[in-house]
Image (cartoon, rainbow, N blue to C red; front, side):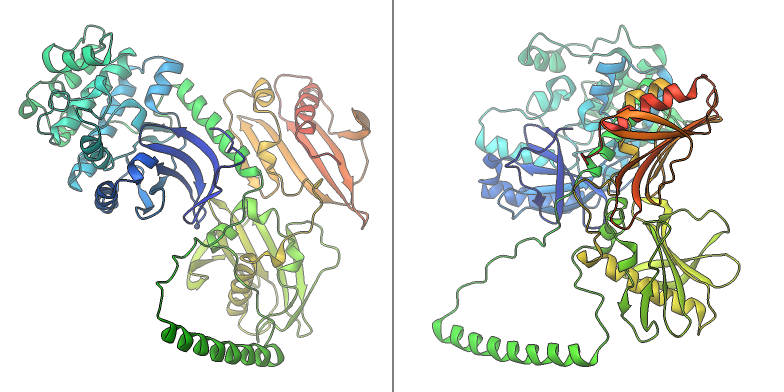
Length: 612
C-alpha cells in the first residue's frame, strides 16, 4: 500500500481514493471509500484498452455478468463505469496478502492449510461458473488470504482483456504461463475446465513454493504446460491426490469444482485458517489501512454529470425563460419557508453511511448536532454548556424534554433489540435500559459502537420522540454544519489505534491486534494483559508523579506498580480551561517494570502527534 502522488485523482466515480494498492497489466488498483462507508478496491483500466470501442462493449458485458457472482469465497463487484474516460470497476476490498506474497514471505503452507485452500478455490469456482463465467487467469496473486478464509478476485474480467489483446496484439497470450492450461497455452478452446487446471497448479505452488511448470523462460514454460508432465516430486501425497487429476492435459479428464469438493469432504472451520505468520501479515495490513483512514480524507463530491446535448436557439430561449420563472418561484418558496418553517437540519453533504464512520464522528462537535429548532415535536433545544466528554452532549427544551446524545460508544449494560422504524433509510435499534427510551444505530464498519440518543423523560411517546430526535441527528451528521472547528494542532480527530508504533506495542505484547473500544479509545488485550490508549478532552488534573517527556511536555504517572502503569499528559490547553490530553495505560502486565514499557509506547505516540 502506497500513498497517493500529488497529481493522482482523489475520486473515481462516487468513490474517494485514499491509497494505491498496485498496478498490473490491465490497470492500476487503488483503495477507495464507497458512499456507504465500505472499503473498495478500484481498478482503473489502462488507456490502451480505454481507447478501443470494442473493448468497452466487452467490458460492459463482462461487468454485467460479474455482478451475478456472489459467495463467501469471492470479492463481490460493487460498482463500475465502462463509459468513463478511464473505465473502472470497484469490488469489495479484502484485507490480507495474496497467496503469492504470503508463500514468498512465510514459506509453503502446511498440508491442512492447502486442503482448506483447495476447498475455498473450488467453492469460488462453483459460484463463478454458475454465473456463466470462466476466470481464465486464476493464479496465486488473484487469491487473497483473509482472516476468515480466502477470496478470489478479478473474476469475469480476464475474458474482456483477452479479447481486446487478441484484436490489438497479434499472437499475444494473456495470463500467467506457469498457471495456464494446455488449451490456453496452445490457443485451443477454453472451458470451465481451464480454471480447474489453474487450481491444480496453485495447490502445487502453495505446498512447495513453486509451480508444476517452471521453465527458464515464458516460452519454455508454455511448452512444458502443453507437452511435459508436471513436477510433483515435492508435493505431499495428500495434496498430490488433489492436484494431479486437475493437471490432466485432457480437459475432459479433470474434475469439476463440485467433484473436488465431494472428494475433499467437510473441511473443519478454524478461527485462524492460515499459519500464524500469515495472520501476522493480515494484522499488519489492517494496521496500515487504519493508519491511512486516520489521515484527512478528501471531501466527497457528486460525480460530474454529462453535458446536455445542444438544442436549437429557439428551444434554448424557451428553456431559458422557463428556468427564469422556476428560479423566481423557487426564490419565493425559500423566502416563505424561511419565515414560517423550523430551521432545516441542513443540506446533506455526504451519504449517511459515510456520516457514521469513526473518522467522520471524531470530527463532529456533539453539542452542535441538536442545537436549535428542527422539528415540531422537539422544539428549541439548548446544549449543555459544559459537557464532560467531546463525544457526548445533553440537550433540553422548555417543555421538559432532555436528550443525552452519545457518538461512537458501546452499549455496556442491557441488551439491544430491533424496531420497525427507520431513519435515513437505516433500521433503528432499541437499547433495553430501565426508564425512558433509547434509540441507537451502529457505527459504519464497527457494529459494537453506536450513535445513541437517550430519552430519559416521560414527555409524550418516549420512543417516538427518541426516534424522531435520532432521525434529526442522522440528518445533521450528513452536513458539515456540525464539524468541530479545531486547530490543526488538535488531537481529537486522530485514531488512537494508529498512534502507537506497532513494533513498540509488539515488544510489549506479542500476537495482539488493536480493537476500537470507543470513538477515542483503543485497546490491545492478551489473556489478563491489557494496553489502552485514549485521547480525551476535559479538565486535566495533574495528579500523580510528574514525568518530563521532553520538548516542554510534562506527564503524570498513576497506578504505578510492577504490573500496572498509567501515564497521562496534556497535549494543549484550550481557551475554556479544558485540555486535550492523551493517556497510555498498561495493566495486568506479566513482564514486570510496566512503567518502562508505558514510557516506550508513550514516546512512539508523541512522535506521531501534531505540533502544538
